[in-house]
Image 1 (spheres, rainbow, N blue to C red):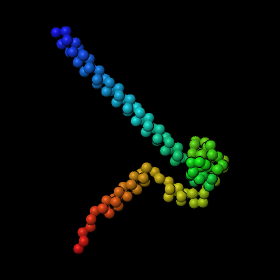
Image 2 (image 1 turned 30 degrees about the vertical axis):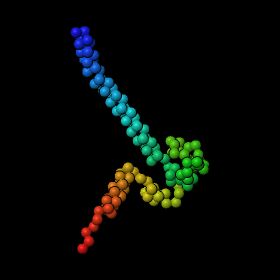
Image 3 (image 1 turned 90 degrees about the horizontal axis):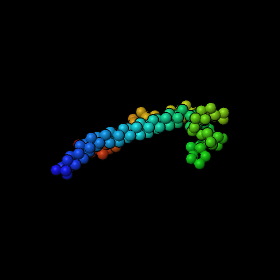
Image 4 (image 1 turned 90 degrees about the vertical axis):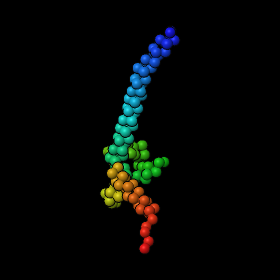
Length: 125
């Protein structure tokens, strides 16, 4: 009798606490996902708004990306760089190399369509 009451009590406690623990875990996971997306959205915006990629002194190498201001390259301070000197045809290069999320998705879909069409056998007369 005592064991029956104890087991029912533990069962009721488990039934009440398990959904609460699940909600806490899901809430924590949701907060972490939102923080991750927010961080990378800010980083993507920062990299799209700094002028370093269209500067003569920007090399793109991780060892020394900028020969003039190596500490400020690809940071917020680079927006007001005194030594910024645009490359020739910088607007044309930005249009060619400046990739946004939508153009990336379009390119991936186009490559996927080409790959699928190359794998599908064609009918021969």
